[in-house]
Length: 331
Image (cartoon, rainbow, N blue to C red):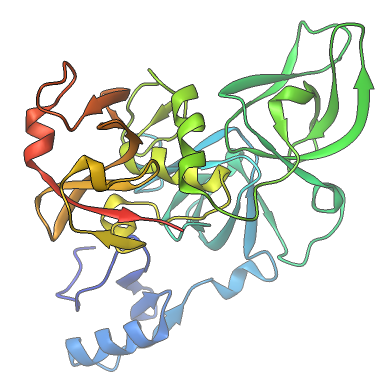
């Protein structure tokens, strides 16, 4: 149904809508204060239904079961991809949307729809099977987990940087060693040790993002992408920071609110790992990059690439430079 005039809210992080149900119109929201504001704004004493839906019972959480799950704007495959959720990452399940979709909130606060084949709904207190295993992180750009570690001809599932896996027994071959690994739905495969990180760092250092991003050089730009298989500018920064122990918001316009402002536009005043923010106006940030040093920065624009802030450099991007609005230092 066409939505009435509702008060302003951030649709990335909150649900606020009026639904016509058989029993009448109802305000549906993830936030009670927002729903009450909508009721006052509309001037109607409409009933309020808060999400998560009570029909879910205890299953108000979920785990992503595929390497990269598209988060859709609507519950259909052809809908816009808003973002992506990676294997092993937890989401809040808000409601069922037909037979094939779940409406969810990802662990970075983004709202959208995941297909039922990509999600394992679970009780938040669930502590058996996958939940009971130690969790390791995939550091490699891409890898396949094999059904048999000694006969690596048939994969069980694939993974990409940022996926989380349950880890089981170690295995050793003449040429390589690794571990049995498990998806949230307990499919077992085998990966070599160099693919995995036992844990994320506990102390964030911004410059540590750079080696990760350099490994993704040339990866294609993808709107809403969060993995080296296809990634957007803020997804690039978010994934690199997460692998270094820091959780960032999803969008460049949200990331710019973090850290210490750096007012200077002189590259000599920047440190490796500083974030550079771009947009037509200071209040309309649309792009983010990571400063590498020596006037260079890394970002996702067409592909993951290197450009320069120095006008005399061969890879200077004048169009991008004119929209450089501010910088931030994390940590």
